Length: 276
Image 1 (cartoon, rainbow, N blue to C red):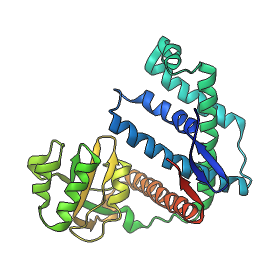
Image 2: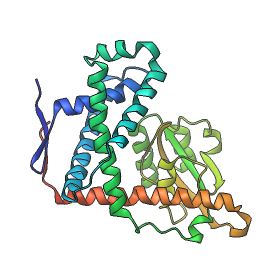
Image 3: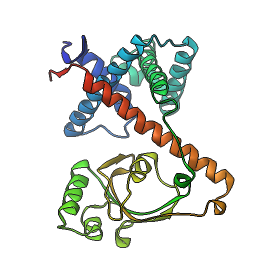
């Protein structure tokens, strides 16, 4: 039986919507999640559905339109990825969850419309707001990282560090699942582009020696990063091609930050009620 999980302004989000959004994600996991993991996944999806609904509502107000070909290209790309993974068994895998290929294609089509509308609206919202300076391009970071298996472990490590109960090397030995525990989690000295976007998006916010990020969710685990040193590499020592790559990475990271701020502003102005 379908039921209402959340109210977003004058629209609702239902259990069916959440399960439809969860299905492609669960399908991509290497193994079935535990009950606790499944609960957390569904919670995260519900929050993302609320954010998506806010953006789509804003896009409607601004009369943002989509090209049908964009939507179909998105759907074709997702179906190809599914086919690459499951081969001739795609229909059977979908049928186990009560979907035909046509029904799953329709689900992807609805998802595509939301994702494309979101990206177009946010691109408009942050256009012109992203500026990258030469000093940002030549910024050189020396950091160290705890990479924990769970969000709870990473949060415990962060709290112990902030309270001064553990030094960073001690926290690495106690909480990190990474292979660099003997080196105290040292990430070395680097320009942007060496680590994942999730990590570097938080690293660029660190300004003072000893500053800590919050818990960062990454494909490899849950990270906490500390700034050891920050300097400026002479711009002439960085090859032109590398400078352009770093500039592009910074624009992407700043766009994500601006996008998150924009969605947060929509959330702050909206009427949102969770019923589950």
